[in-house]
Amino acid sequence: MKLKLLVQEDQTENLALKIHSSVMVDVRAYKLYYETALKGKVHQTYLIEEMLKLCMSEDKEFQKFLKSPVAPKNSAVADHNSAEPK
Image 1 (cartoon, rainbow, N blue to C red):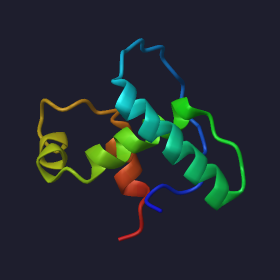
Image 2: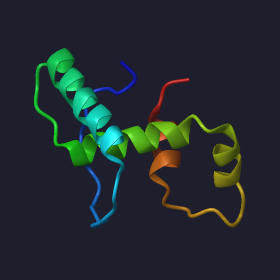
Image 3: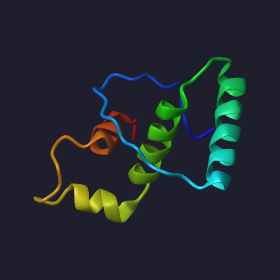
């Protein structure tokens, strides 16, 4: 499993978006998989957020961008990566 136990420690913002139905089928399936594997409930908002963070943290070009002077300084992905053991 790529995602670990989720702990929400940051402020949230609202984001309204549309997702293809086929993607939502997969999100619901992953949510069920996550809850079954870790024997606990998770809100799909947090699950989707962690999926996005994981995708961005594994994107080498994006990581390079985050080190540039124009990148935001309060990046969750940069914080996420610095917390990961090397």
